[in-house]
Length: 388
Image 1 (cartoon, rainbow, N blue to C red):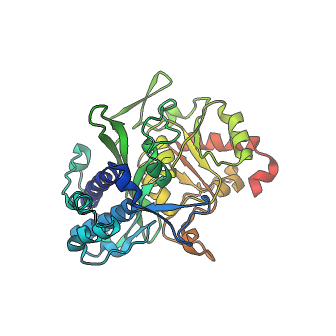
Image 2: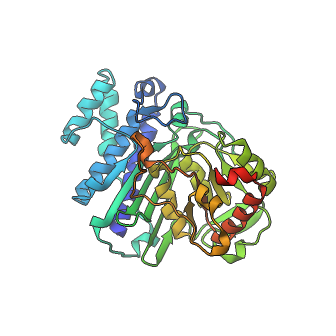
Image 3: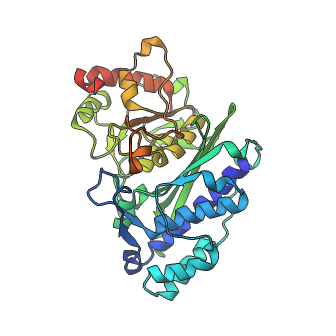
């Protein structure tokens, strides 16, 4: 299993290279964008785009995993449809050339990035050997989350206490592995291709985060790092009881969040509410320890948006739960939290809505803090809002 995770880290880095390469030339980049067809669109957006980078990244991930782990490709699912055929390596430059209006130099340059080998080493992962039957694994891929920010390409956005409201920093590549029998997330990779830019070369560097939670083994890439928050130090690998009783909460939200939720959050979190773009990036803010909670009440995130972060958060002692079910739950009954699962589509839904997180979501790192947060949220929501 750690072999699969290691390969996913490599392909995520290759995917990040593609995302960066596609953004190098603005004129070239404009050729890579097309509007999504009906059925593929997210109803949250009036116009929803995909880029060639989206499709390329998804196909690279599938092809690489198929080469290393034959048979696994049939259980790899993603946000984007594509028009690539089986003669992948031979066709890449030719197909790119067609898409790029015969721009041979650009198409060959992109093809080189697509087929370039990437090495990835991590001492924590390299020292562990975990085996799991390959045939129980399913993979959700969001090749480029926050496509709008990717297309817009803003590079000079300032962060607010480490959180970027928009810009290329909000773009993520999400790969989540789950158990196809239970729907439980097992491994996650979040690659952030655009973290910092060299002022001289204008080239971007990225960062990769991962987590593994299987049969009592929990590991993640932040175990040895320290996050600074409000001038104090918190060991990100330690998400247990010592952090559970801090009186203040912080949350990251979508700018399109309902006013009723925003009002309740302001009473719970005060001024520690941050707006940010991209479901993957907002989840990453929780993973990084920049906020306690990512909350979203709408049904416009999907399994490919949440699976990767969910696996990492599980490895840290947290998770991602269904918001609607949490609000309807009686905590005194001692029922388990309604964790999202990834193997069952929504009954009666069509298109992408089959895989929507219908009840909204809350991502968290500490269960104790989540329980306290939910109690305060319910108290501050209008009665009707807790049962909609």
